[in-house]
Image (cartoon, rainbow, N blue to C red; front, side):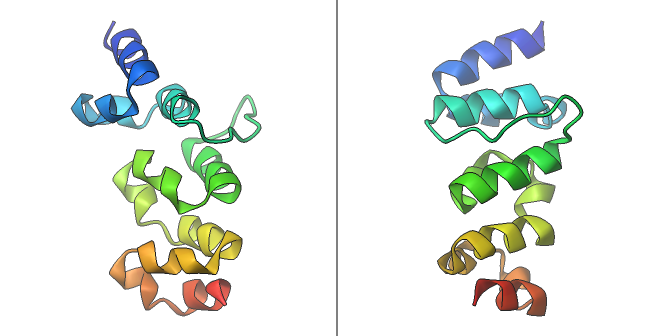
Length: 110
């Protein structure tokens, strides 16, 4: 299946995700495999955890760098960036421009 093929590919090279279809890019198992393959600490995964919940935990554990593996909507998500800057205020420099001007994100960074 496409899922098994993508999972095998990203287990060897996380960058392979860029060639996968959009629906697979939103698959929690695929994202977890990439984060593990790239050597980041894995947050505790719960049975009914959503992708956003997992990414929030991954960002809290590893910082904003893991967001490069997240779907676009999570890369620009306010809650995700608040989590990142609470961990390390310097991550604000990597936030999308509109969030660098967001009051809540800036306050969380200081």
